[in-house]
Length: 585
Image (tube, rainbow, N blue to C red; front, side, top):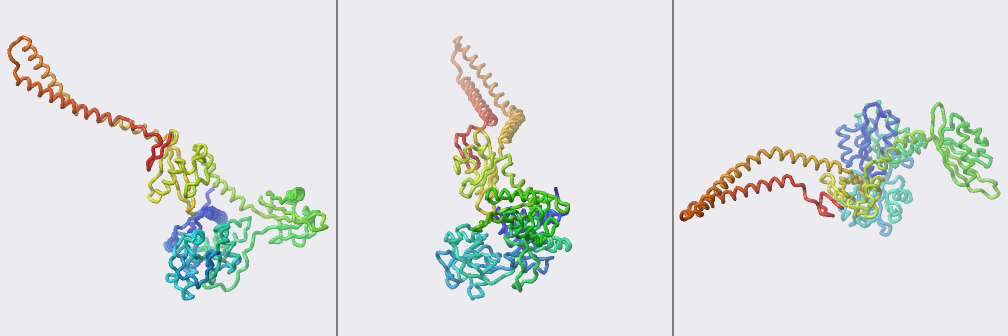
């Protein structure tokens, strides 16, 4: 159901361009829309510069921006919300090199640098300023500097040997913290990288709420976003696209004056249960659960601590966990404070201590109502490839098949067998190269059917999304219409052609009639022996026959032209391909 009010336009910088991040960002937008009661349109800017251009032009309500952009636009904005990572609203940049070739700042001269983007704070500006503060001019220091667009691509350039050094943001100047972040970008290859130096701190990236939004609405947005940091209703994934705990309203562009308290987690309940299902330990972030005060409730049985609607399913989960000796999970609905809420519970057995008859069991209970309602809609949208009636594929840039939906396997049963040699995949790779010139779709003919193939590069620059549409009926209709149009054209042409043929036909018939009469007269004279045949008479007959031949030739040319207009296109040889059409038997 559409939300009331004009949509809020939320622009993000390009580092959220990967497919995974786009899905997460869409989740954030839907959570925010639900909280505000207004639709939120999440868009990704192509460049960091375009974020500034859109803000200056007043065409966006909100923008995820770099630290420098937040500082620059803060005086002319309604508010700036700074990201909180690991309890901090500032971060550093770490210099990264290959582990097998360790470097120091003093050894950077003549090396090659891989940066993220000219306006990326930790990916370029922060390390650049740090080097300049040490009297090292990057343009003179490095033999080569290149921008790669994302942290991942810059790290891959170092791993491949294309570059020697790059930079990555970190909330703590500590190697293992950096390695945890590197592992998110490059997986196990983080072991091949080494952080060898750190810059000073800078304020975190943030969300700019522009003056285009009325003050009252801006205050509502600030309240909604900061409340999401407390993860009410199991909404911790809403912060995932930004790799943060939440946002907090922070003003000023200088360095941090003091530590911020860690972002509050969502309200949840944890219990330690003994073998008799009595609570050894009870903890809740608010001290209440289902409207009951659970402080100082140690020693109470589970059935007395919680309402029966919650205690019965939870006790069932606990008994199943003890019986099967494996961790268990469940979800259930119940009425709480006049509302139907969804809860998730996890039960985990602890290791039994020596002499202990039965180990304690840990129980975690969380409210996931908001998350569940949003996920249902996102799951429905995510099912589009499965339920889409036309073939859809995802390929690597080299043509290796990553995914094909069920219709793709039905329509192209040899897809897995032929792999990159399948005509559809070959056409998709060609179309991907043509995309820069927007040259349209490729046409593939398979088994008497025609397919239009379009390939769209995904923004993480590692995959191709391929759509194949059956256009056989359209091609047949086009052929039928072309034939009908050709016949209609012939009908209108017939009158003109008839006039064109009448002229040579008229003098052809007249000359033939004259030649016949003359030859008949000469034959009769010779038969009766009435003297010699006059040569002039024979010349006249020959001229008449010559003109007749010319007229016949003209008629022949006209007939050939007409045959060309009515003839069907020649059949194509088996296996023939061209740059715009791919055919197989």
